Amino acid sequence: MLIHTDERNFDKIKNSSKLFLLDFFATWCGPCHMLGAELEKVAKSHDDFDIVKIDTDENMSLARTFGVEVLPTLFIFKDGKPVKRLEGYMPAETIIKFIENFK
Image (cartoon, rainbow, N blue to C red; front, side, top):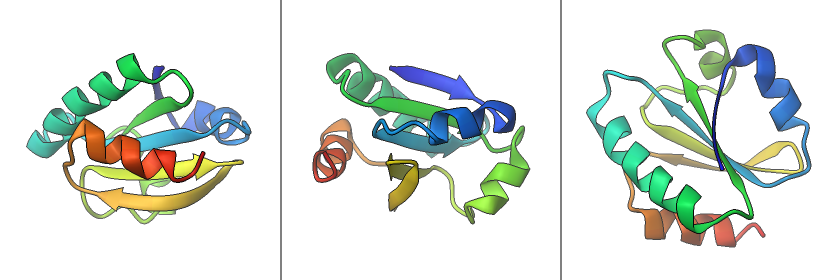
C-alpha cells in the first residue's frame, strides 16, 4: 500500500512492527517523479509491506532527523528501525530485491 504522511503521523507508522519503505521526495525533483512511478508498480505488485511517502519540503524537520541530503532517499524500516538507506532513482525490480533481503 502507498501511504502519504507527514511528521505528525510518522511516529504511528514507525512504531508498527510491519516492514515498510520510507520515501523522502520533493514535488520539484525529477528523479523523485521517476522513482514515484516505480514505487507505484511495487505497491501494486506487493501487499506484504507498505511504501510511506514524505514530502521533504513540507517535513524538513523529519528529513533533517534522518540526514536526508539527496533526493530521493529511501529507508527500509523493520521493527520500527531503519535497516537500509538507498539514494537516487532505481527500478522497481531493484527496490523489491532490497526489501526481500529484510523479510
